[in-house]
Length: 294
Image 1 (spheres, rainbow, N blue to C red):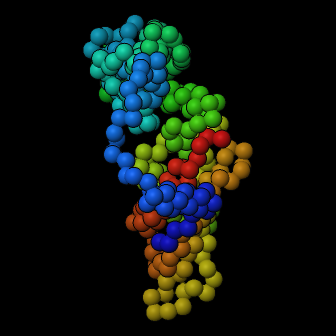
Image 2: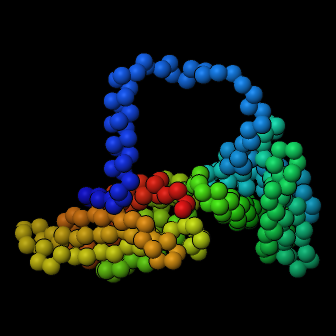
Image 3: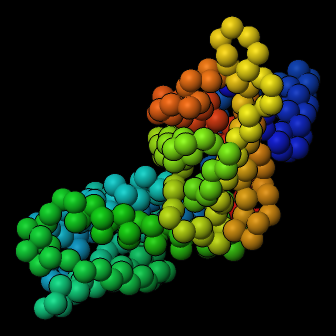
């Protein structure tokens, strides 16, 4: 698949590299990572994405289950570009802890509090879910993973909002899969799932509903008329992926084109969808990496 990405900023980036290379020929080569000077950096604060410790959940939960939920939440946060762990951390770490309340009807309330160094509370989130009390008490793995994923989504979304307010983007924006147009049969659903898998493997956070600073990924396929001439009866197809903001503004496009056997277009799209998604995902990643949240 041929890939074309649209974003004019790449031209400026290449020019900057060339200019630096020319300047480097006229300047002494610096020693790699040589210390420029010594100073007091104790006042510099590490952001929550760079250092978060998840403490065992307290309240209506056993000690063992509280520790397991903390570990599951740390894993889920790492999948969302937050450096989280359950170790002791250091004096600059941000500390996240949940407190559980279980109602008799199975309604579970989890209150998550994030504290900055110096024990200053910087974030409070309340998570509500319905659980089977027996599964909660024994620490069912699937249940804990679901609760951890929801908590990590909410924390990540709040951090993204803060980062955008500061005019910067530390983590990739979340992507919501939109519609697939022009794909015959059940190929649209298979192609959407294949692209979701490819983006997930690359570490891109996916969301069911678009966030205010996220993207919606739309796909469309066009079969070029009269392109089935030849002995292999192949059809020339063109696929365009569009990244748009929730307000409909386009951020960029990735285009793919190739000749595909006609029988494959009309049949099972499983393998074809995987090939298209793996070829197109790098272009989408390139666009996401240029987003700064503005």
